[in-house]
Length: 120
Image 1: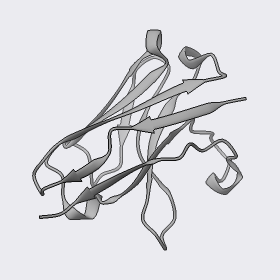
Image 2 (image 1 turned 120 degrees about the vertical axis):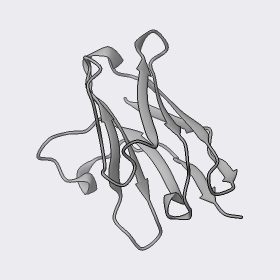
Image 3 (image 1 turned 90 degrees about the horizontal axis):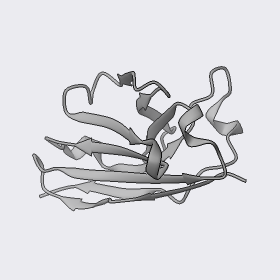
Image 4 (image 1 turned 180 degrees about the horizontal axis):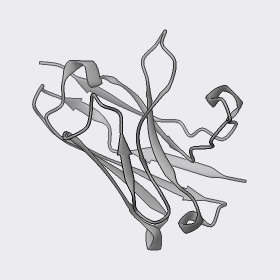
């Protein structure tokens, strides 16, 4: 059974930085692409950054240049370094394995997420 545990969120002022971590268990972590998602109440969950098993990365346009996704396969952990944070980055952030062709509503292994609030 896959378990995903996110941490590192908090309250930060606009322009500030946070580093999120997500540790996975129950999978051969190094075999999978990983992604960071976020959700604002009333909105759909969206993918903001992804990293392949080989380390290639991809970003949502609105975070490109500000966010950096990385992974440490020895620690079964994926990170999201978030710089130059904006109020519109406020959301609950989750990690998961992106699955091509599978709607997010069919994913059944979400963690608890970590709240990021960007406010002065």
